Length: 463
Ligand code: PA5
Image 1 (spheres, rainbow, N blue to C red):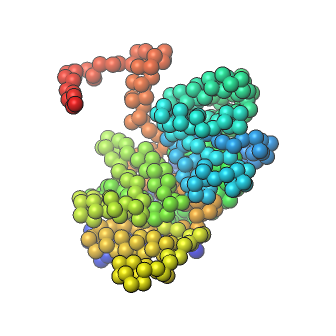
Image 2: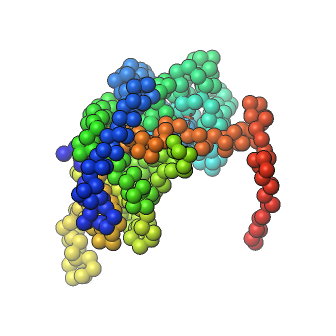
Image 3: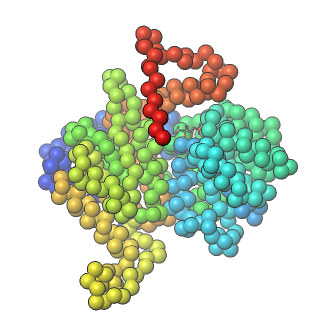
């Protein structure tokens, strides 16, 4: 079994307000219409994340680069943010052995450690730069637009360090960016820095299977061909218009229906797997930035995704999921086979609180807790679904990520928004650029909108 989606606990009688038997025809019809809308838009060529075959040449270029630089680097540092870094973080957690960065070179099979900045907090950048040896480090600067201030600031800090150590930028930098546009493209051409293309029709949060995710992954030894093969299989399995046979459509339609018809617009993604735990923040960005929009009628729409992890958050958020507002769905994400399970020793035979655990395995415990939490939620009338992936290997991870990207595209049509843009983040970017002195933003209005009274500052100083 490769992937399954169990939606029993999104339906009646498992949960009240779930899908009833006689709801299915109208849901299937609504999905068919959304699918038709996506198909019409797809014809314009905007869903580049699906065009995995077209990126084969770039993957071959990555393989050649990895072979050429083999043994040169102990550390790979990804400079990027949002869609340019969350995919690499998810791939690292899922596909590199646990505590990869703490392992010796021999344990890593000579492959480099992987650091992903994903922010401009000086503490993190200073920390990473203090533990890597610059002559043995490659910095992979990832920005589709080539104009993201956080990434460009990270780059400037790194570039300065390299030049102060007299290191050749072309040996210690690689760029991943648009094939034509943006500042990084121009700098790469000027300085002979290796550069890899993000296809123009692949947006940030849909870019994990492009060099945005595959370059850092391949540098650390992850099998990116298997990743993309699994993704292609899932893509092909999620292209149809029949709701009963499209797992991405089913996920999207049931989440949308829970939101629109049952008031359950908070969508929790809860992996019961440390390998998959960073799929949750990756999904949160994908679902939030793609679907939280103004729709075709000018209404503010979109679900609120929430990242959680089992069993850890049974001791945290699950109380809220069980007894807080009934406005959530929970998607449990589990792996069918854990590669290295651990048997719980049969110790403390005389101690009731411990004895029964002996002989089970930790993987079994995690799985039982996942199913027990799902059952408890259902008994409390709270809907959930269960996604199962066959293993946490590259093939399955590619499939899982494609599944969620396809679901997001389809959900865009259900919510009647464009899942590929992010107009809501532009104003904040413009204001930050203006404050930093970017000449293109000098005319950006500082004052409140016309007719608004400027707010009176209200600050409370404590201590
Ligand atoms: O999903 C998106 O488009 C965004 O989150 C971007 O990935 C993020 O803003 C970084 O953009 P860029 O890759 O252009 O630097």
